[in-house]
Length: 69
Image (cartoon, rainbow, N blue to C red; front, top):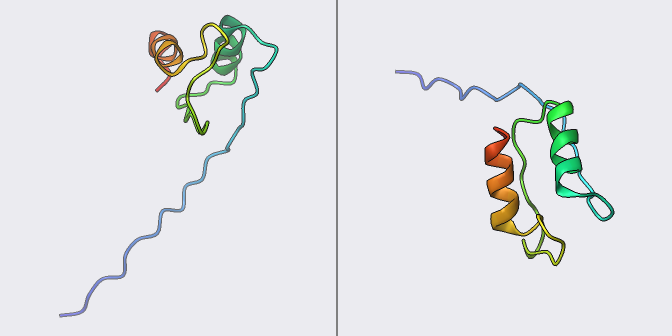
């Protein structure tokens, strides 16, 4: 019996980065929705922020409310 070769995942999707230094949370969420972003991955070394709306829990709640995973 021959082993079947593994299928390679060939579908690619664009990768975007987001900077939020001077933006308000509502503006960032609006831009994500405008760009039809479906998934946001927070890669900050520490997912905390002194800026209101950008701490890990606040951001996650706002993204969920907007339907962004």
